[in-house]
Amino acid sequence: MGCQGDGAAEVEAASALRAAEAAWASGDVRAHRLFVEIAPNTAAGREAASRLRSADVHYRVGVERFESNAPGVREALAEGSQIAPMDPALYLRLARACRARDNLLRAAELYSKYLAAAPEGDEAAQARDELRALDPTLAGVFDPPSTAGAATFAPAPAPPGPWVPVAAGFLCGVAFTSLVGASLRARRRRGLSLERLLTASPELHPAVAYLVGSLRHELLKHRVGATRDAVEGATDPTERLAFLERRLFGEPRLREAWDGHVAAFERALGPRVDLRRDPVFRRADRAIRRLARLETRVRRRDPSVLPEVRAQHEALVRFDASLAGLVAELVRTRVDVGFLTEVADAVRAEHSAGRVALDALDLRPPTEPIDLEVFRVDLVLILKNVLRNAVLAVGRAAPPRRVAVEVEVELEPTGDETVTLRVLDSSPEPLDPEVLFDRRVDRGLGLVAAAVRRYGGTIDVEAARQGVALGSGVGAYTKAVVIRFFRAAG
Image (cartoon, one colour):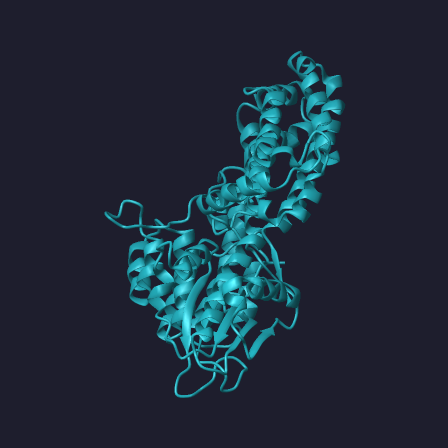
């Protein structure tokens, strides 16, 4: 009776709180909503509500101080960030405060964050209008799908898991084409572990992250993970076994569900990997099959089966943790001098760009290596396109022909850090910012802008004003394409 009523609700709520905390830790904009949606009449729901109230006090103090230009903004926001996620409505207040100070780029970024987190919020329509006044194209990204005639690129719900900042639609489109080409280009022997394959083939990262996210959400979280309290609890064994029967051994059958996920990996990756030979997946496969063999005893309410269920449950929890650790690194790209050199060398090797005689190609890495939550293959393509465009532009101009790539980090009033990748060139040829938002296939920067938006970033053109040089290259550059992303947490 306990598992059918309040007991089951408590288990579900505890699982929901863990999922909300994982989303918050990963920077998922849905984290605040996930906290709010936990059943309020449960212990986990009461804890979530209490934490939100406590954090909100600190966040509001920080926002009020920012609005009034008072000291202590960072400290107040940091206090809140140790407790629970920020209410998305506060992003809107910060955006308006930045707009009032004519910090329009930061305002646009904060408007975007608010609309991504609360697209149907009470002030969403007004926020879209205010954002449209700053950046009409960016506002279109957050237009409702029903807007007549609008070619929107609104972020699709991301697959569950700690890597959710990437929109599922963009991920699938890029990853699937990469997979087809990668599978045809290479035929590796069976038995290559998934981890080794990912080290050798970064073009597979988006697709593998999607597959792992599906496996973790659909099987390891909702079927296996949800039984944690029943497996580890000390309540009546009969009630616990009844809950295990309903949760673990429903339809589709446990082994069939597992085999379906493994088959999805093998269809996507082809002969490059055999998960049945991968040691991590092999141990998980053994745990799933042993657990499936216990179904009859669970249905008979045999209490002696509980230690065996617990052993296999613990094995699968370890498997889930290993997947989380593996995938957490896939969506992160380390930006340092090595990364910038790799991109520059790739552009130099291209026929068209390689024929341009540069007087300088200056690489200015960050003072310390930084991580971005962008798949490496996509960040390389984004930066290569912008750098190639700069090289070709100076190639059409008289000497000196100078190009630079610099990376800077700036702390935001919200406590986030913004990473700026700036590609500067000395060409007098103007670059209309509208080109960045032209998504025709013959306009590479328009496609780059669409990709940048999918990762929650911004792209714009900066021009030298009144003879003031851009970046640290005094007098050397006339303009820059500027790309900004939030720095990866942790």
